[in-house]
Length: 496
Length: 107
Image (cartoon, rainbow over all chains, first blue to last red):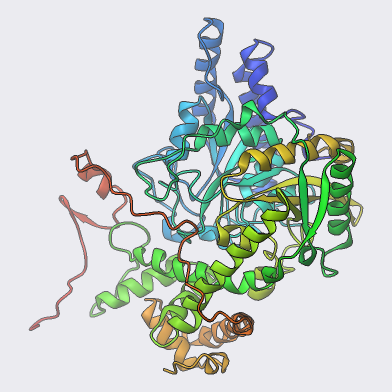
């Protein structure tokens, strides 16, 4: 197979339009993707559960409505994969953890509810790094996820299965969650579009909490316009999540094809490091050339705190995680250990947690607990929160000189299994994505080129970032670039 | 424990890892303490770079948007049913979550 996307050369918007105009049926789209999933999932391990019957039944209902001439909602019959840390009443919500291996949610996440209201169909739940802690898709109770472009490499993480399912043609689109790059980095590794919206854009109700001040749900798609469409459907205030922004849903689909006149693109000098793989910097330079050719202005900007982002993140995220994951105590839900006669309640808590959580999750809980413990709080947590303000201020300063920031999504293309088995080495892969979450701004990764390794073409993404609630600008700029780079990115099968 | 930001980079001890595991309600096998100690120490050593930046007088920022607290309307709403709450419980007795005995004999 030349590319992983041969099965589905079209994006979701085109599929949706084809159903609406009667060119094809929702059933044939869903059946096609289910067939791909049956064929490829045993190897890629993108899905933990696939809901074939539910998907086909929902698709047939859409086709009945279409034949009867009833108006169709914007995502009618579109099969969408859901990361397994997002609550669905359908199937289980396991976070790819033994702790929640049997957990069934009594409610749907707001994002899922809104997708369903827009006509989308939940085709399955996707594998992930346990509790979204990881950048490779290797730390998964249900086995590692594989990259559709090269099965000997990781798909990135933590939204590993969602990225592999979209790139592998097993769904029309997916949702992931992004705490420090978990949507954007796998999108880059798998040759798809991944959007981390501004903090507060999409409700976190029903998203299993990891780092509550950092987490955002976002779309993972085959095109920028698909990401716009999904954000339109999922965004907006939710009374059940008091941290959602008091703003109406976005209407980006209306403006997405409109190029931005006089766009100013900033390239942070600190992003173009010699430590990046050469193809990564080449992709950024090619994107800058494309923008220049479209009349945009390229400016160099300074983000000196880029490097301390990892340190800041690996204080804040584990600290919040250690608090959030305290709820898994083996009492109300989740894994409960068997006690021997005479063992006490403390042992029940501790053994349930140590049996239920994998090593990376336990590592981060200990890290967070240590940094929040008496005598260390000021030295770590308070300092990280002070740095957080400085990082936010630095972005604000940069955005006075430009509208969007352009740079790499990750320092490398997809790496091999086990290549970053040292935890710190894995953390450092997130250098270009964590600050987006720390500052609460928005960022998107889009395919921009390829790196050849061992005769295989590996996608390379570039990242655009824009200030808080500037998704309209962000995605229009991304759409301009997607269109300009189409001849390059389509060469090996990325849809544009 | 020390409250001096310069001493925080000092090597993490196995006793500290054991203490933290206890605080975090984790049962770490004795044979794995050293592995965790090494990994956590490496991360903490990296994080020490936070000390290189002067942050005097910078107000901590706990949240990306310092939005005010938004209260829900004070209107009773249907919560989850008892069945829904108990459907994931590891042990149930009737309409209750079952837990091991908390108080020892004679407490």
